[in-house]
Amino acid sequence: MSLSKLTPKEVGVDRVLDVIAATEGRHRVVWTAGRVLKEDGSLHQVMTGDPVRRKSLLRRIRSILKTLASDGLLRERGIQFNFGAGNEAGYDLVGEIGKVGVPIDPECFHLKKVRHTPTASDRDKPPL
Image: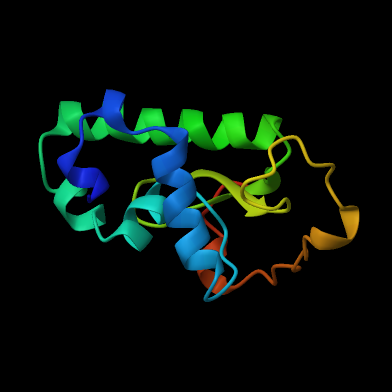
């Protein structure tokens, strides 16, 4: 069942893991609450629906992603991502689904830093 059809209390770790497992079988992605909804096919329905429900659903999914990171299944990246639900912390899958508490392999996590070259449009922007 689509995450958009569930109440925030019905969205659990197992449902989020189902979405992650189905997607990671095809390709690797950075996980955010927006990405979970996008891969589930629920992003448009949630983002155009009731704002109170949207906020609580996004909060619930973000909480689940943090829990999975503390269990060693995901690892948080040090930068923010936007996959349709605002700027959020991104997570990489570093463990095996079904094995909670697996040690993180540092070789699986690569964060590439790209140097930004200032342009004319950047002159009026405050420094980061």
